Length: 192
Image 1: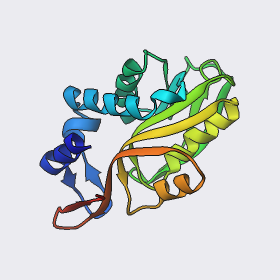
Image 2: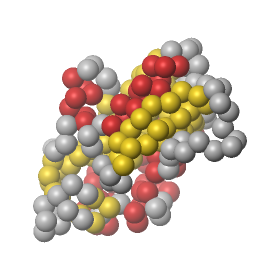
Image 3: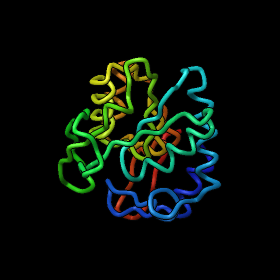
Image 4: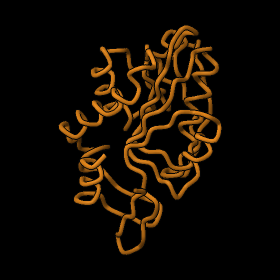
């Protein structure tokens, strides 16, 4: 997606060969025009999947998921919580994921009230690197008995193996931008 790639080139900050900050437009401050275009793109890519729910993980995926949901006939957005609070019922799906960005494991949860065996679930997230978060969300979908129809990812780090491994399992993973390499000089090399 040219608009997203151009935004990464203009405003993305390469911290090191593995970390790209997109805080000014995607996961701290939001560029609503860009989000709208991302929503259009994911809606086109998954329009034939009869999506009944969109699943993401707090917090950076929520804005993207909401825009996509609006483009897909306002299907409900469910987000996995990283911390159980007093307002979450006891009856939850849970799994553990590892965040390489934060260097820690999280138990994520989704209330059983919000995912059902007759749902067709699309996952939307901002980044895909090694695939821990995406695998955790797929596990939650499997626990619910729902149908996982695919995942829409804004930015994939192609130099890590998460996307490759998920595609090898036969999953439809659609990344709008795939980064092949980043270097210590701040250069970003994109696939295609």
